[in-house]
Length: 404
Image (cartoon, rainbow, N blue to C red; front, side, top):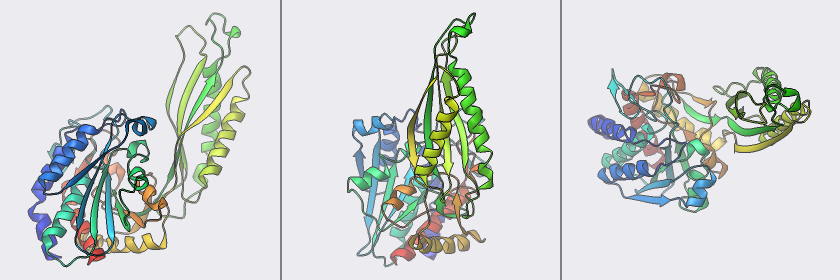
């Protein structure tokens, strides 16, 4: 334990520089061309002494999820006979958007925080997991088992060509999985997510004679009003798992119309419906589709189509994952000097793919107390570098116990 702590502290500056190099390479998804970042990450990992496998995903599979290019990276280190634990983090990130006061690809450091898109979610855990493995290798302890690093590039598109692809292709068969998370909680559950695209079609007409058309935007307004009314009832249903909260619904994208002086003949919007672990995804989708079609049916001359874009199953705790979480909670509480508990988060992550394969899985990694503190998916995303060091120490100690 002392050797691990000493190693992490001694190499913290190098670890920070490693993370800064990852932040400087854009890997926005969309558009989803993450090849350059994977190549740079592989170079950096080789520089640390690792052998890196680069598994390029076939173009057809990449395009099917709306991306352009993707490569999954695997590092394997065998200490001896024993279980295999995989550590997974994703390198694709949401586009920066507006409002930044720092360069989103600069990796700037100010008052102990590093800024940049993906610095917290989850390029930080490329650094956490790589240096935790180095600490175990250099620590000299008698360990039995194998550690794998899985660095994938499609979490923002659902994880199908990342973790799920690695499992389906038989490239990995871990006994335990640690997936990217936050320093102040060990996550054993998270929400599911349903993305639907709703398209309403009417008939265009001159704005001077709107009676000759069927206004798709007016119909869309009616459907949206029905959805927002439905959303009001979600707050009453709270998950029994701490940190999850209630279901939610957001319409995040809308487009349509031809010109200012034309009755819109087509309007599309996409919605995000978060499901708590207690909900049945198939029932949620069926109910939501029914509500949409019923609302659209109130508008003469309007047709409505609903298409599923994404269905991410909720991630639920199991007896095996709870035992795994207890190990991380113990070491995190000792390193951070405060109680670190098991919890859920209202996000959805790649962890669900490993869990669906029957592998005990928890989320833990570098990051602040909450996604709000991290500015995750917002301008000026940031990470406290002291937490990067401490989380690395926790991961190394917990894995050392698992393989000891």
